[in-house]
Length: 309
Image (cartoon, rainbow, N blue to C red; front, side):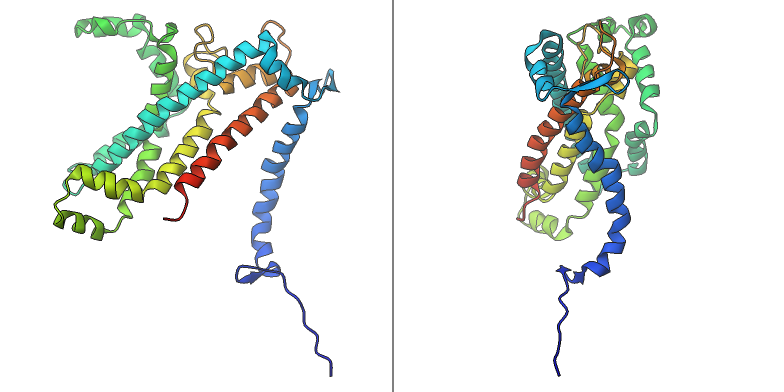
């Protein structure tokens, strides 16, 4: 009697037949709404023109224009530098204060913990357009000037959003204020998962609070620090709404707050002055370069923070 063996393709401890039905809906959603648009954007970056006016294959000409043609190169370099500054401010202020607040909120002797958590998290629940408009009024000397002068704070009465030297920093700090609650919440969860045995051992050894933070807490939450850094990088390189709410799509004043997101909108969707005709191919080229830049930032961060200790 011949015995036949059926070969099963396995991944981990299960067969393809077992796990494929469970991941098929998510896989289909990913392919249709993420993978295909990404590949289509990469392909679109090799064309110029629009669907209505006719498209023409130009190869890598769009990428060359971004680096050589003054009309595009100047605006792209400015937007790229501004986006890097925008990211660095978030990394230092938003994430730095997030770790500080999380450390304070997880302290055993803190009173009013729920109140402080609510105060930190409330700005996230507000719409970006609403907070952006409110801060635009607060930073306008016409609106806030009399009140500040009554408090003898005349040095704060200035057009913060109309000054090229302060506009980008102000927009970034408003964004940090609104989204501070997300990294704080993630850091709180990470710190609460650290075993109390580490702190008891450090207490027996006579370690100070600063030593406990630098040598115990921070190394143990390093994977969370890495993930928050990646999320900050991706979100900042796609930032658009906060600039739109506080300034305009041109990154006023005089492109001082122009980011990659606003430049992409003007070129690929709305049409950039003085032509005013959208160029989806050039917009796709900007998006493709942004994707590559994010990859260069994300992959080393993952390798440095998510490795096994």
